[in-house]
Image (cartoon, rainbow, N blue to C red; front, side, top):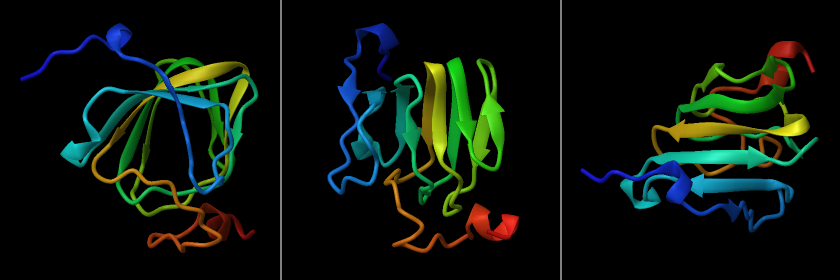
Length: 131
């Protein structure tokens, strides 16, 4: 077993080689991605906005600071927990005026997919909304 302290880990600017996800997000990996899982602390700059996307694995978000909004779902605040089924596209994510911070736990691969170029296997929130 390995014990780490969150404050001892370094922040890294999230880099998306495709340019799909804009600059303004930082991550603090808390386990080695080679395990096949993802656990990280994520920080969005004030008023940051990420486009609609999907991940292949179930993902849990635990909000710790600020306001985190998801188009079509609502706004999450500190203490809120959000669960997203893998393969399901969801609306854009955005931070409030003070930014936001949250833990992400992914039960498998975490790559970010554009639903307009890679169809999500479990559907798209826009379809359910009639968009």
